[in-house]
Length: 151
Image: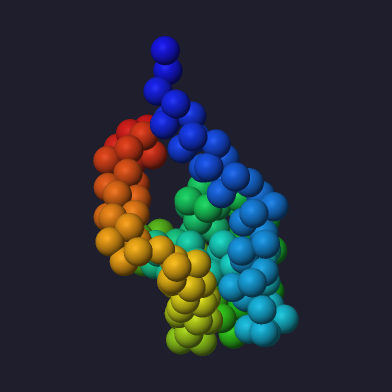
């Protein structure tokens, strides 16, 4: 018999990872941050904040979009002054996408909103439960089936 906990976690992850769930979260996180920052461009900003300067192709693989889509979204963010293109020091023919100071500020705002939203949703939990959830979720991410090196 399969472990019902595994099925429960798989079902919950399925709900969290749905495109509609992500879009709804991204919309809340980006509200009021300017026309260029929305549920479509947020993954590009957030991805660059995690990776540092990256090519459109490499960033696309990181965030699950094709290079062309990343490039279109990066164009919007560049026009808004949130990212810049810079030469790749390892390959003079290639270009890297990099956050500007304003781009980093926008990402910091979205991350603060996310942290605040999570804290508000856990406010009714006993503190020990919230701390255990945070610790165990981190462990699951670090050691579970999606951990780096588990490919």
